[in-house]
Amino acid sequence: GDMASIASALVLNIGTLTEDTIESMKIAGKSANSKGIPIVLDAVGVGATRLRNEKAEELLNEIKIDIIKGNSSEIAKLAGENVTTKGVEATKVEADLIAVAKKLAISKNCVVVITGKEDIVTDGKKTYIVKNGHAMMGSIVGTGCMAASVIGSFSAVERDYAKASASALSCFGIAGQLAGEISSGPGSFKERFYDEIYNLNSEKVNKMEQIEVLT
Image (tube, rainbow, N blue to C red; front, side, top):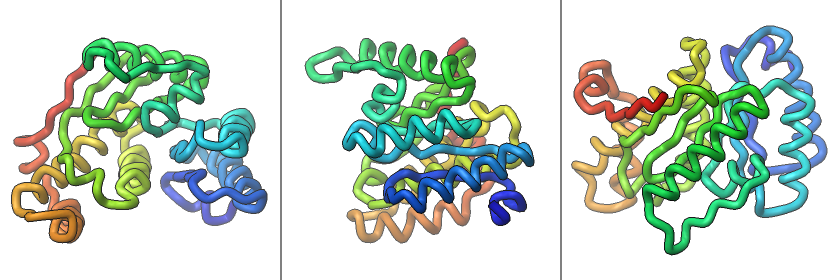
């Protein structure tokens, strides 16, 4: 609670769950809420176990979450929807996922982020499709957690949380693209990816940003 009250953003990750960590998250979340600090919920593993499903709902009911981030199945589970991707045209899948993200954003009054080959970001009204990224990003354990932290950093300085999330994911993806250009495999990619995030500047972002805005 004390740490959250002096932070600029709070990222809650339910990847490792115990009763103690959930209680800590609730305390930190309520502290952040009282100070107007943005909260990102990384819905890791929702849909995989009943415990995660229950605890994610608990957090959403007891804390005002500003941004929910997850993959398509995690977000669909939170929205109470089933999204079929097998044997379905990509454009239909994207339309279905946008609808699911919007539904959850409206019901929870927050921004929803679905990460994937193309990332979907919506506040229920405005939707962003982020097209930056590199296939090798998926080969590094922890990129999802890193992305949530980058979203948290951007939301600390940009109060339009949908815009902040889209920009964060675009920058994250640009670093991946730049690293991919000079890597021969996952080992060298990981090192270069970290370097590219560190060395990212507005010139590179302005040149490479690929964000489609849907209204």
